[in-house]
Amino acid sequence: MSAGLDVGLLSPVRAGVPVEEATGDLAWLQAMLDAEAALARAQARLGAVPAWAADIITEAADARRLDARALALAA
Image (tube, rainbow, N blue to C red; front, side, top):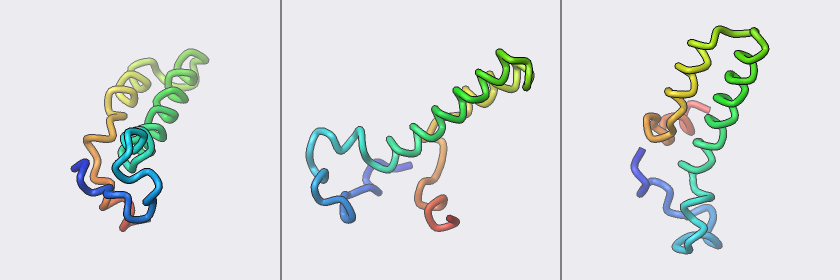
């Protein structure tokens, strides 16, 4: 995902300020992926999913690998 896609059009209060990086589209998407990865790791610790699956989910949980615009359009 290109960082330029989130220009703050719908969030002018944060556009162009230091907090923008922590609250933009990429940050929100990464937070959701972090939560999913943490859930997978917790399930692995409880034996609900194999540890290797939790490792793969954690490794794949990188928002930069996804197209946020395509996700938004598909939602």
